Length: 400
Image (cartoon, rainbow, N blue to C red; front, side, top):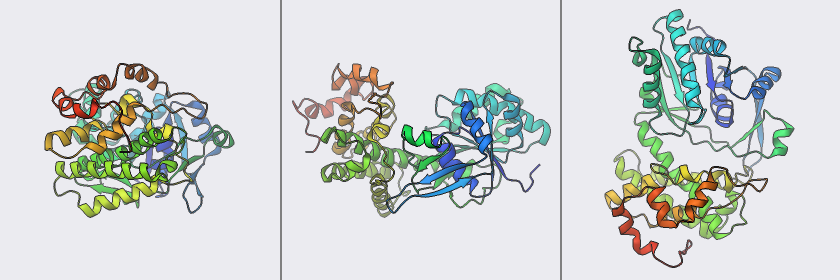
């Protein structure tokens, strides 16, 4: 079956699916098949047979079109299974809530693939910002396919570090062209080298890494933490700020964000000795701050900071570095400042609405900061005792 027609099946025709995975492989000559629950999106892809990506940067916008594509409804199990069975690659960019629907379809496609093509492995790029998703998918596939199916041999489960920033588009932009997608110029897709079962595709923007866990945590500890810190500290400084670039143009907010990122980078280096040099991380932080300051992207602090249960939750961008700092005796005061600003984060979207899942968090926050740190962040009593002198201050100076 492995012919010259390269193809990738992309579960999820949303922001990452179209602006990132679609762009990386579409530009490399792959035929794109998008699987999505949004029937209107699928219909438009099939009608127009192309979509536009607008690259937003401070030096001016540019556009590119991808036209080697088709769409399939997620509900059309027969067509999905056929597409998966014949694909050279599959990508998942459906989010945590979409995985339960996608994995059974993957299983059906794998069964058909084995029946038709024998032991031809399927490499699956997991384009999700979730830790240990490869193990979750593998275990679920084993449950669905049974003990006689060689899941280990038939699937390459490839973890990634997704660092591309894709802003929320305005209603006006979406009405103008429902298929167009805005994105920043950055387009590096970092993937696990050892995850592939077939030869690693020779694709320009694909960057295989040996220790993918370290690179996933680099995204969490530096990019995710820095981005959210800018939003939380910016809103604490001036609740009229709407865009991340405004936070970066505020010298105090930028300085505090930079300090938190440097502290977290030091913790990351301790956890992965020899993986990242000072020069590498300093340059990475400098590049990120410049990307955050992209005025043309118009990335909102609402998008960057909302979803507080997740972003302030255990094993995410603040709690993981802070627990690492506590365990390994590293400095963390700037990280803690940003987290505490997050507890008071209350921006609204374009229509003046709060993020729906944040509204229960706001009720929890009325029980006090310690309640959030203990029950949402789930810090240990030992850690809370260490930071108690800070927590008991009458007024916390975010800019101090």
